[in-house]
Image (cartoon, rainbow, N blue to C red):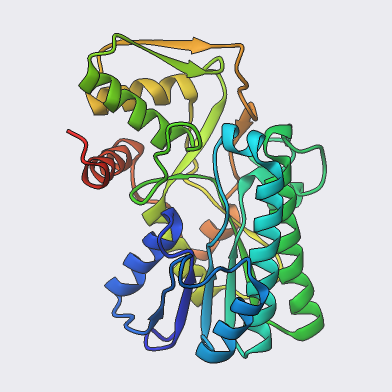
Length: 311
């Protein structure tokens, strides 16, 4: 991938997109095509086609998506499936139609069956039922990766698919209801510490296991794949380490400096009981994650403080 080429990072203000921009700029990329949602609504077919016809990017990182945690997925399944199907369809088709050399589509580990054998290999796709709390989002992502495969088969379009594990880091969504587990806990513990709240209640039993990957590690992996991979098979990207929600909450509380009581609410959903990806495929190519969970949480906390005026 030529760093002087025209590179469209779709969703550049999000967790993954902003990490990719940092990674590309660090290597001297100076022709990035960046548009906010207000400037370019990728759910709008006509607007998407006009952008690609005019700008003709050489490379595309498709990170734009409607994302959220258990609460957001459960409350707005129609928005999740509609918006993600629209974004994927518009970008993949317009990129191919206007001569993009290579496109990377970002999937999600929630596409795998709820009770898949651990660690989860790429061949586990469609071998079992999905987790109900994010099924609409997962089905949209499955459609996106199949679209990439189909455009490769029918049109020879070099579209590749990366399947990351649970992500966190600078640029995350710290919304009090709609965030994922790491940013959600960072905000709740920080705000409870500032307000002097003696107890924080956490959804679920605390027993599910999660593999977590820092966004900057993912960005490094995605640039690596753009340079070194071209095939129809998707590629898992994970850290290879997992932790329970309870242990994660304790670690985040320690990093934040919150010393109150952590109470779990088993009446709330746990989500998938365990989700560890088998990242053998990318590791055999020569890539591995580098950022430790503790160091990564420190960077995410610093980002929350900087962006939200936290003390």
